[in-house]
Amino acid sequence: MRQSTTRPLPRPVRHLLAAALTLGLLCGQAGASERPTLGLALGSGGANGLAHIAVLQVLDELEILPDRITGTSIGAVIGGLYAAGLSAEEILDIFDDVAGSPLDALSGLAGSELDLMDLLQLGLSDGGLFDSGGFLRFLAGHTEARHFDDLRIPLAVVATDYWSGESVVIEEGPLFAAIEASMAVPGLFKPVHRGDQLLIDGGTSNPLPYDLLMEEMDLVIAVDVSGSRNPDSEPQPGITDLLFKTFSIMQQSLIRQALERQPPHLYLKPEAAGVRLLHFNRIHEILAQSEAVADELRDQLTIWLAIQADAARP
Image (cartoon, rainbow, N blue to C red):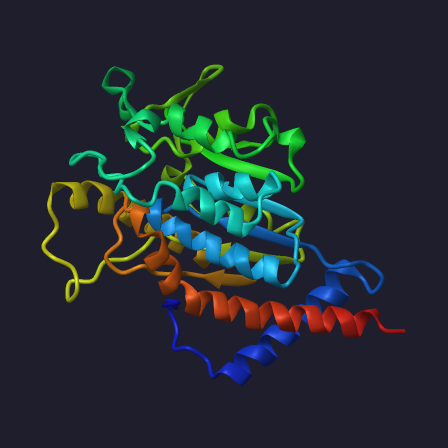
């Protein structure tokens, strides 16, 4: 379900507004003879971030290739794979391989043909419950891309410097080292050393990095997967929920502030009710709950493409 801080507009009105926005972008920024550019920001949110795949499926369906991608945490993982040349379906297959096991930091990993304990080794002495190195090697096994220069789509990955608290935008060098830093959830995955920096999850400073696209892209799509809480449908939180949901509350606060300063052209917030940070085993349920957002994106991009086609006619 797509959430909004305002009452949803009727579909025809939303379409007219989208058309007007896109026409303005076409005429005012890109120029009549240039193709308008599209930027995609994929946010942080743990397993709820599997909803990013639903967004990528729409782009593949419409044969739209983003001109630039930014990603934080799970957004960096999925955005990195997509930028490397994998399709949405190929990324879905990768996460389907581990869908038999909930990644629960306290109850352990169980019941999968793929032994996730080999992917996430205990690393308590390094500042995290798990070492994500094995998981990243598993991901790297599905692409030949090793450096940012190998990517088909320019990518920016966001991490946070523990010492300064500032965002660190990584756009060059080893790809999977950057992704490892971006997904280093404090207390869960060990931080990553990069020169004098000690990098942790980018969600602690910029969980939805669409701001990196606003000055250079004509149309910016931001996908917020930070989640929400519902006292009517969720049980009283236990210790793991309090820890992980508190992290989500912090991210939601940062996103609200960013939206107040400058919203993206298209803001999407897929929701997966009852999904926790590490419930990657619920991938198909997450994608099913993302269908409404995917439908809205398809509608808006279909208009975008139609206006481009009209503008291109002599």
